[in-house]
Length: 229
Image (cartoon, rainbow, N blue to C red; front, side, top):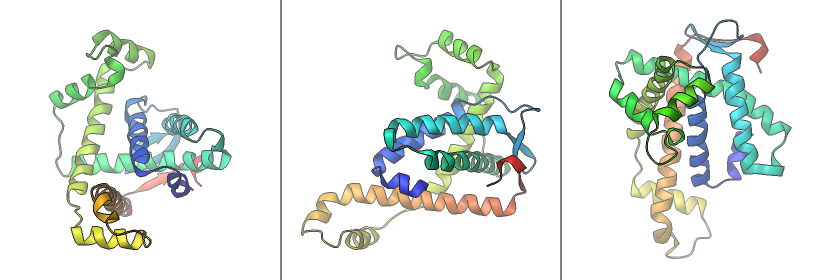
């Protein structure tokens, strides 16, 4: 279902959506707490039902804005399942980043927080806006900073995987010919740069997906009964 939803958007729009969703996953969550219901355990780390619910609602709102009247219950159900999968994937990546020794400095966390647009309504970081946001979500600065540290850890290990992927000009030409059998002479050269970027993005996504699948095979993942598909 997600693949069908993606087909309705060009690859640039999907990239923008992915960034929005990642932001929701890490910049809009509350800390995990006991008593919230366990959606899953990843190598002992708890993902609460509340976390899944918040990510799901943010996803629904984002997709609803994009698809408008085309958004339906089937899509919503798919996103509920995807919310849990994404949180499990994120937890696996953060755990692996820590295991292999990737670190994020306090200065990196500080710069990341200062770059969040919501905290800079006038184009410059506002401590008052930052504190107002934390007060609104009832989160201590130290906890919020740790969620940002985990997000940066995740991005660092993702970049390690992504940077290991490349596409040759021969691969690009072959793929373009295969996908565009009715292309006219000169079309490839005109579209080469954009198509190569699209192909590289697809190849990186596939590499990252395979990497996470390998992590999942080695992990102990237990889903709560209420969240099992």
